[in-house]
Length: 423
Image 1: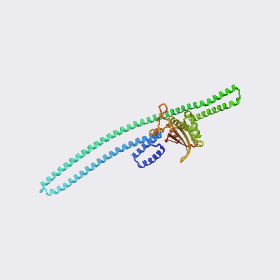
Image 2: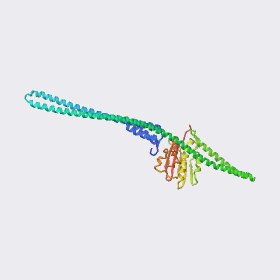
Image 3: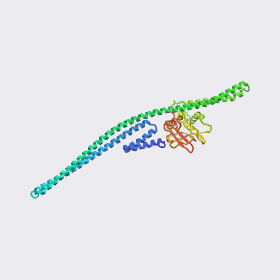
Image 4: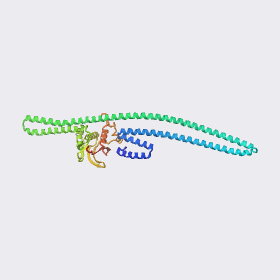
């Protein structure tokens, strides 16, 4: 996940899940679910992330209950051990008393001879028995105090556990509410970013239509002049007519490209050529490319294939817009290069689109964050931080990959999209 290879991270998680299930360890399962929660959050799979979080909370509760059960079992074992020790002492006492009685029976035979010795012996034995009894009572009192203390500790633990459960429930409710608000805000900002892009497109179309209209106006003016002069009218009409036809053709082409871009209602793949889609996007952005910027197109001959033209249009438009902004303040050579290829891998054929610019490289501390929602390095009035997030989501919707890397001079974005089968 640190290098944004989410698919490989998911594969490693699947392997880890099997090992955790074999181990049967709650702690291993808890660690696994925490990593899975990060992965689901990173991939915006919030429903699965919420389920994973609930499993984590349940496992933590089970771990807490297990620890309490272990403490209770330990205390019970200590209590049983002390009872056994007391029982052994009592048996020893009984054995000693039995021995003393045997001795007494023997001494009865010599009672007349050793009466004083027997009396002294009995006194000593009684004294020791009383002393041992007192010690046993002290031990029992100590054990009772310890059991009472353990009981109070268990009661305190139960109360703390109940409070933790209530706190976890409140946090869970707050988390669900926060996630819902985040989803609502994110959807709203997606729409705001799309509307902002459409606004930029509208300005581009207006700028591009001005030139064809100027061609037409110039042609009309020459025709009017030719009519006034009434000389060699056919020769004078040839060039103006060509100018008008060229202007009309360009205006029609721009309108056609705008219609293809704005048509967002078709969710099925359509037959199109990716090179033509990119050229259509450049029509809207030509007015923003100044004379100092060199635009290089290295297109591989791509066949017409089923794809999602509107989504590819939005992806290329946003990446080209960022490239234009990047080279605008560059002090060196200003170059924007667009390359396309058709590649084959184990999964089938994929289209590769590379957009390179010679602007300032992306800072190392910014690079891991550029696809995060709301993150932007632009001024507050120039970006919402949702442009590259929109690009990332559109690429992932098509089961593709998006890679960004710094080069010796500038940065390059690489988009790979699988070739879509006709539905």
